[in-house]
Length: 601
Image 1 (cartoon, rainbow, N blue to C red):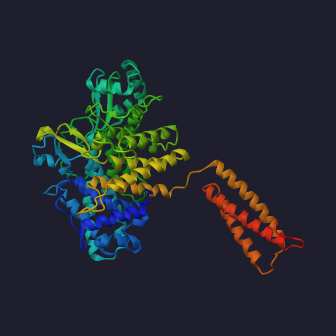
Image 2 (image 1 turned 45 degrees about the horizontal axis):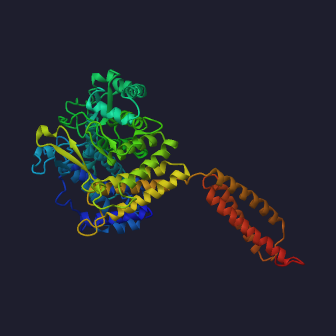
Image 3 (image 1 turned 180 degrees about the vertical axis):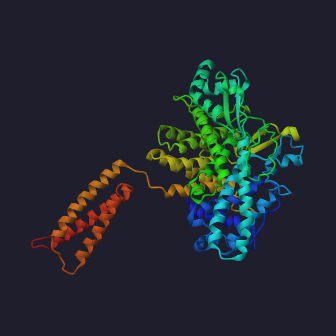
């Protein structure tokens, strides 16, 4: 199934308008307000495309496209729609703030599940903050601040102007609080080689072919510089363990599921209110690490910098997060490619060290971290091509590109999904867990991202084909009837698909792949066509009615166009040159037929 991001995003928006708007009024539904993660994902399904794709913008009513207005007609007209979104964002900010208004809150709510279905969550557990919410809030707040900044300069409605100030302030405060919480959720886990974690990591890296002693030596050498950076440079919200200075010990870095137990508070002048006490065990999670990187990346995007969305204090916090972003990518990229001959990543499924679990989902998470690193350094080397093979194998193993068998255990990867225990939650109630059901949507997003990055024609074609296969699988999973028709069975899945469509839009906006061979052929054709064109200009018109001159002018225009495109679009230049050669040949044959003694060849 071909990916058509514009049309498919319009279909999703139309489904959201049908689901979430009632005669122009936003309807949160029964579950609205019960999870800041789900509420943020729901809003991002609209605000993310509206702020990332010019054709979908809603902040300037005078430029809103007609097909966008048709898709969103249940939400209101051209002038009402942006004002409604501002109001909805304001409701979100007020809902997820402490009752006394002292600080933003980031509850996982109904996204938390009790490990024992017979038990129920405590009220305190429902209000626990989670990394998904911190990360989503960063993306949502940046999208909102950019939206408000443009909208207030475009609207002339007094009521709209009056409603912008409050959500702008609360959004900026929430952004700062989310950044502070992400800093306090980052952790470095240090352990001995003889511990269960140490043995799990060395087994993973050695793959049964290298001794533990040799793996430890290579680990020490490979991550020596990174270890030094962590111990010397990481401040704000992190208590680096003294054991990290002992190079004989192993370590992992990344994000826990929430604020780490005993994490120090981050000093800030921003009015974020009391910083909550953390209860999460200091264990990095692959899933939550990927989620954290997604939000942090938005802090230093071109749009954030161009619009100047961060104040001075937020820039300081963003730099601290950026250092963690870079360290984490380098670490997991090194782990994934630890052995150049056979990457640990290629040994599917991945086995985690902290939770002692294995799943294709964890292989996808490590692949996501590696893709982030490849994008950071804009890699187009053999590493990228090898990742293509990993993605293809994951799609096959997950029964996305292969047939489902009877009682196939891989179905559980999608439904009910992969379960993560959340150690530390038992301190305030029954043990909780987190469910990940978005494997295919995440795989689609990584494939599209890598497709946009690849500059190798073979790898690019494989990735495009794989993305279309995954998208067909994803599109078939939409709800076919009932309240959520046209969407998916969770806002997390729907939001990931929307992100993939935005990524696909950006990919199609890039210049096509450059082919040196095709460029050489196109230049040769242009050279021949230019020579024949010059010769044709020397000849008299065979008709004398001006048609010959008009034809030559049209050919000249196409030749100029071909010369302009030959380096960036050699295929188009090739086609234009072929067309001019054909038309010049027609002129030559017409002259030969019209000359004395001429005839048809």
